[in-house]
Length: 266
Image (cartoon, rainbow, N blue to C red; front, top):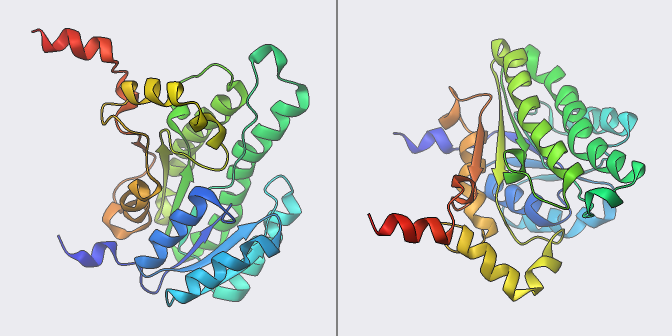
């Protein structure tokens, strides 16, 4: 297989939620593969260090303000991105949030905040960018989901609902836009330490419990996602659409230490 299939030179990628966390790792991986970037966050000034970093890699980085809960902000972002860069070839729909509470404590506004950000925002950002991809008959849209796209966890009801919705949304959009040369896939990370969940990793007992449930016996490292994001953004995945790619160390197999011990006795 030619290495050119993974070459993103000459392509421009939008990465939403790029002020920190996995969004920046996705951006770095795409830039290393040759892509120029449009990077977004709610506060423009938070993007400046990342813009400088990407430009230091020899790639272009255009910061644009975006609040995915605001339809007008989404339209302004799409217009600004195209005005600054011309054709947008790749969208990484990464912006998201979480509110951790027992189900009985989830408030009406908690639900709205999470679903409006993770699900409604993902759809309307994809819609805004696809409108310009369709006439060009080319596009790679990668919606960022989670292992909670296929698993449920206590204390994460709105988040699990939103990420499950992203998986289903991905399949629908793939069917809608496939005839126009646009692939739509979901990249679903497992347990990765990010700013959003770093408090969990202070509890070493919890970390040990988590690692016991992961066949590869460790949480994810951000660069574990590099190959997957470049694959889904590149022509290497040109006949793959509507799929959810779990990058989770195997936790979605449902394996546990107890079942592994039992199987070892066969």
